[in-house]
Length: 393
Ligand code: DOR
Ligand code: ZN
Image (cartoon, rainbow, N blue to C red; front, side, top):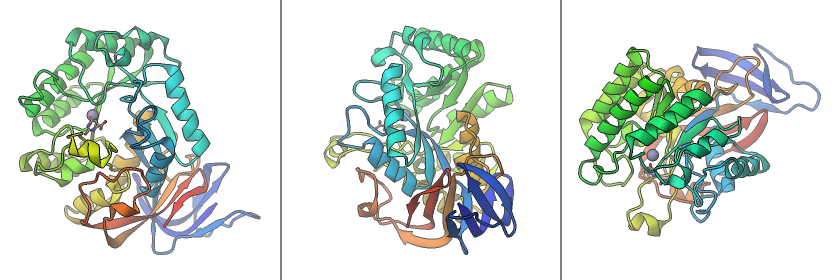
């Protein structure tokens, strides 16, 4: 595929060039490139081409909760949001605690063909909070473990999991919630478990990724650990930088103005590794009954572009780094830059286009969004995965 006349923006900066994709990879970037015989040409005049987005934190609900989302509907939502790769959490039914379940989800994603998937495996077997021996039996292609939706209660269990992770080169993804305290004080629950896991990682050497960081205290502790050379990365969600009121139920909860300010300040200072959606589809009934979570794949770019680039003057290349390049590095992918040799995954956006979020237009199965009716800037117009269009508006 040849993508012509776009303004190119990636973590390295911006320029005006064409992109030629062959055999799924970027073959050339330069002026006046020509398509070969039979190769499709995409005229992107007036649009910005960026590396497609990579989501470190997604719930596709397979197996067990397909009434909320399937790999197919989730993939369509991802493509519509400009994503070509998502990392799925294991809080499914059954819990994803083995290679066989993980592989079946990834195979289904491959069959659908719209978005690549890595499926995380649970830190404790079936979320029992005790057993970590299954981690020793993981196949080599499964490198990420998570207890998302919960914290790992016992420090000794997390210690053992991190020892295995360090030995096997796994990355521990932490949903930081002290389960004994979250009903009483969720701020304390996040802060305590964040500090504990940072210390456990420093002690065991395990690679740690902190999910959906939402408090200024947790942020500060993570930045301190990084300055000390800690083997730690972290993500922030769009909803934790957009909102600071308490109406929409998510875990961790929407925080206070001071937290939002601290997260945005860190982003502007280039201290945040990644933006991840925590795309968490639920039925209206489940939301009514208090299920935490919001869908996010289809609004993430617009929310972040509006908040960070429009309102705070962040260069788009910085946003590209947080949505594509660093997530790719964390996942070990050959993605996230518009350079020859990288995967031919491109998103075309119209930065100046404003629109009103209408959940009825969502491609995903669930519509639990806190952004309905909001006016946002920055629209995803097309997504290309390895040289093939997976979405076009
Ligand atoms: O809001 C959330 N929803 N936070 C989580 O950690 C889990 C997620 C879900 O699975 O619905
Ligand atoms: Zn979580």
